[in-house]
Image (cartoon, rainbow, N blue to C red; front, side, top):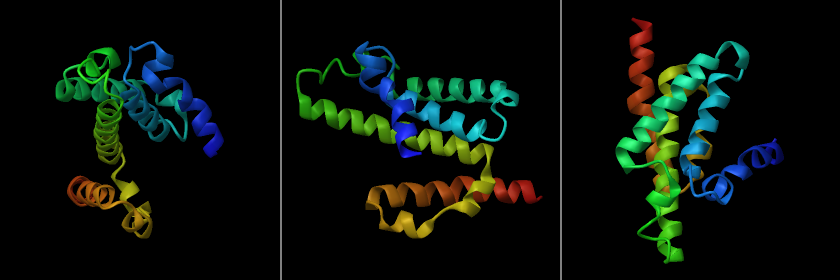
Length: 146
């Protein structure tokens, strides 16, 4: 439920409970991948879930230079607006990485996409999802069909 999702994710905000350590955007991306990778039988998919978490960690670090919130926000920590903007960009990037990984692992999810909902979203979100769905998923579906 929505309330359960908030309860699970809330401690991860502000760098893992105000600790300044793990970026909440990365944590959220890992949570989403875990949900999809282990949804049917999580005890049987732990190795795949750990691999997904590592892939996200490594990709996030390669793109952003760090996974630690204190390091990522060092240059904007005294400017609330800049800090929020940076967090939004990091969250969008991490969400896109998670979506790519989920769709790479489960391309059949493309068939479940609510395109009407996506088209009602902000143009940037719609464009990102359209790009993801067309490029990544269709390639995987074609490859699996062969």
